[in-house]
Length: 442
Figure (cartoon, rainbow, N blue to C red):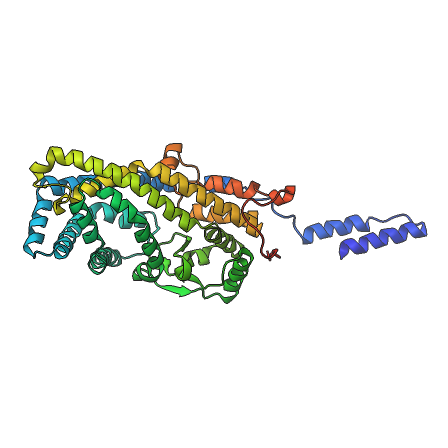
């Protein structure tokens, strides 16, 4: 208003021939005082790197060390069970419990699961509880953590009893000691599909409470975003992760009627509305681009390589140590720790391939979210929040990226979010095909 009045006064002075006054300049000065200049744009990349404090660096360094030590420790536990004769002893106990193969497998698996849990308890306690508390990322009590651990072991045993997958697998191994890996590989897809279908309905609710998103306005914005993406209207869920952690996250899982998009309640608390919508756009990208099915296909293809190489390793090792361990062959129940160790070694060696596939799918979902929302700043800020709240390393060493990262490093994601604007250059979208052109509310 003051700028407008000054301009009119100057025009009037010129019309009447009077000398112009300094009212416009004075009014501009008053306006400048009333409305301070906008702050300079944030350098989100610099904030991500500056936020990676020595404390965060220490946390990530330990996490990398644990990811290297964990598989080695697991293999050593398997070898301990074999060389001490514990595995053979568990087999003998299982055989003494009855003649039915189903009962023997279930008894052996129960004894094996308890033994592994006890031997790996120190490392599990440090990685899942002590470390997270040391760096202020966990809200769990020791009792809650222990209860979740016991619940996980119990659930795995119950599942093996109700759905006798391990018994069926062992029947195949017994009857096909040379080609068992091929048959198990062929069975991977239906089992993976069933597990993916049931995870949101059966597995996840055992450990957390899921409820429909309580914020009605946000829920409607998410459903509107889903409509633009062509996704059927389904409930968006929030999960009470704040009872366990201070980290933030969101994910999509399941398929068909079981498919759901889930927001951690910590994400709802710490991210702004536009950041949450961008995160939802990313998760919708996974749905639209059928990444769950792509992942299942890769798991199936990878199973042939993993099971095949593991079978080769197991046969070589059994030829050398089988008699010493009291293990008669790959179809002997007591050979289970050896198979687990072989699968661990082969799986670890294959991580760079599976991680590269995962990083590509995550990047595609980033592209989709940017094209769906066209809110580059919100995307970059959302990635910054992930980096800061989860103590992530925004720019890890190349070997760490290749070996452990299932997502692109956050510095890469922030830079891409800030730079990717094909619509400004008149270029078409790569992945998003508009169902309804957005009228975005900032």
